[in-house]
Amino acid sequence: MAGENILKTRGKFLHRRSPMAWQVAFAALLAAGCQSGSSAAQADAARPFTVAEVAKFSSPWAMDFLPGSGLALTNMALVSEREGRLWLVDTATGQRQPVSGVPEVNVAGQGGLGDVVVHPGFAGNQRIYLSFIEKGEGGSGAVLGHGRLILGSGPPRIDGFKIIWRQAPKVSGNGHFSHRIAFGPDGLLYLTSGDRQKFDPAQDLGGNLGKVLRLTDEGLPAPGNPWAAKGGVAAQFWTIGHRNILGLSFAPDGRLWGAEMGPQGGDELNLIAAGKNYGWPKASNGSNYGAGDIPDHQAGDGFEPPKVWWNPSISPGGLMIYSGDKFAGWKGDALVPALSGEALIRIDIDGDRATKAEQWPMGGRIRAVEQGPDGLVYLLEDAGRLVRLDPAKN
Image 1: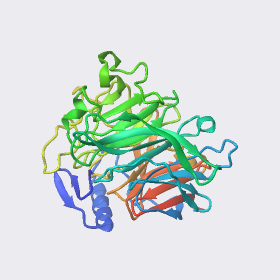
Image 2: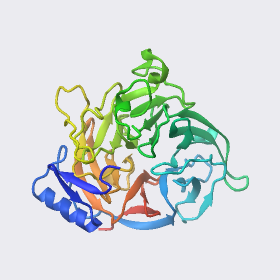
Image 3: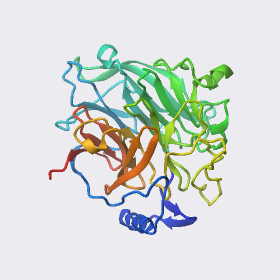
């Protein structure tokens, strides 16, 4: 993953020794005037929130809240663990229950059980979606499926789970699956598919690696997709030229944003727009591991540049566009959880523009960020904690 072990800026490499060393180095770079993207991040900003532990897990990867809908589920969320476990968690009490019926997953490297997302019509269909990794001919790949979450009739369980989409082709290796899910205001399902650390497939219209896909809720290509006329797998594509998008979220105005791990440096926040090519591996504001050069994004190169980028890397693990009222100054803005950066980062979004705002050190790798029904913010830490952010008292 980008930025996991080495930080890079201005062509120089900083070996990562500790969270404190990273923060000091990053602050020094900022003080020296290092600008990554549209503006410099505000490192070590005073935190406008307190942190409270809710529950602990082994290797949490994603979470999603269940809608209330008269089912007394207001505080209930689903949390996935990479090893293949799914939990129903009461975020008010921290009580958790295992959910049975989860499909068998292949756990290796970055792969395992991934995203969990509730269908927009959950109140009527009780449908939830899971992404995970399976083995097959040629290697492994991500898959997407759905089933019914049965509550109130014994322990929670998933019934009728079926796979509706697969990464193609399956390839060797255990990295860059992506497989983040987001439902759009159009009711369609948007899914990220990583390049699997194979580079060139991101530009190949014959496979769905390195793409953002736009699908029906049954996994079929959505009508009107940009490459629909080509037929075959290309009919799934919404955008191409991606490396490893681990964050996908819609803004209140309906625009789709993606947080993407770059190579050594060059992590990105992108506005995901229909038919665009984001350049990977032909263009990036970072360099390949081992210092292999990649041309930077340039005006007129035919590729869509990032709205914000980071060098040194922060390793974005997710993305959420805040829409609540608890943190009034954040409304409509992006929150990016950083893995190697060990921080929570706010990006000011104004229509199709984005600018770095605060960066709050969190003392650990942050895997995911989610908004609760009450407008509070929840983080999943790689170390295992689910924590809640409450507004700090003045």
